[in-house]
Image 1 (cartoon, rainbow, N blue to C red):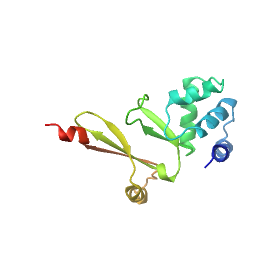
Image 2: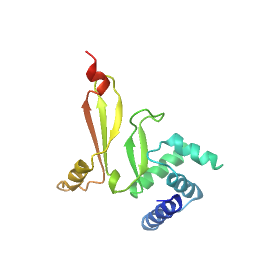
Image 3: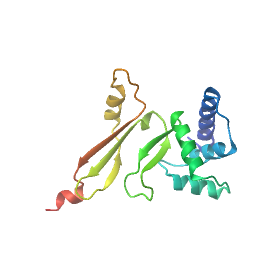
Image 4: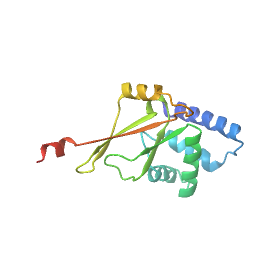
Length: 154
C-alpha cells in the first residue's frame, strides 16, 4: 500500500474516532497521524519525534504519549514491547491491523536476547478464543527458552 493511501485510511479512522468520542482535532494530532503513516513497521517515541522534527514540527513527549494512547484506544495503533536490537526501550507502536493483533516475543533466559516472531496459525487460534465477560483487543505472548547461541554454549 502506498503512503498516501495509508495516510488517508488512518485519517478516516482518526476522524471517525474524534467524531464518536467528542474530542477535538488538533494540528499536533494530525501531524502525528501523518508521521505514523510514514513509519515502516514498529516505531518508538524517539523515532516518531525524529520524523516530526524532519518536517519542522515539534511536539512534546507528553503530547506524543497522549496521542498514541488515544490512537490505541481508537484501534489505529497497537502498543508492543520493544524487542531485538533496538534503541527504543519499553514500548513501541505499530499501525494496527488484523495481522498485528498477536505479538509474539521470544526471550532467551540465559543472555536476555529478545526478538519478535510471527505465527499466523497461532494468531488465528488465540484471536478466535473467547473469554466470558471479556473482549480481546490484542494479545502479547512471551516465549522463554534458549537462543541458538546460548544453546551451543556449555
